[in-house]
Length: 74
Image (cartoon, rainbow, N blue to C red; front, side, top):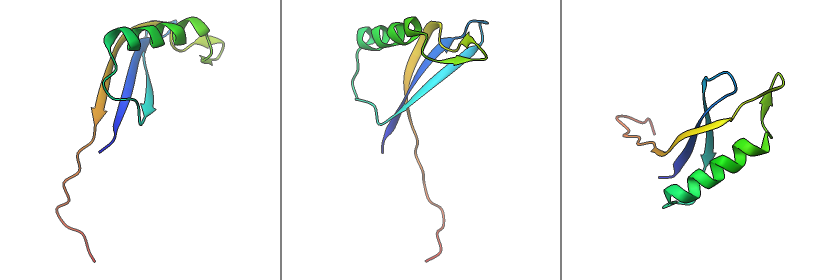
C-alpha cells in the first residue's frame, strides 16, 4: 500500500499547516526532509491571502492507510 509523506509546518500566524505528498520516495533521511522543508519555507511559493502558508518546518512523517474489508457485495 502506498504511503503519504506529510510535511508539517507553522504558518506566518503560528498555526499548524500540513503539506501532503502522494507516492513519496521511501526511506528519506531527516537531513533530506529538513532540507526540502527549508527550501519550501524559504521559497514563499505558497500563500493564502498574502500570508505565507509554510514558514517554519516542525516535523515530517509517513502515513500509511490500512483497509480491512468486512463485507463487499459481488
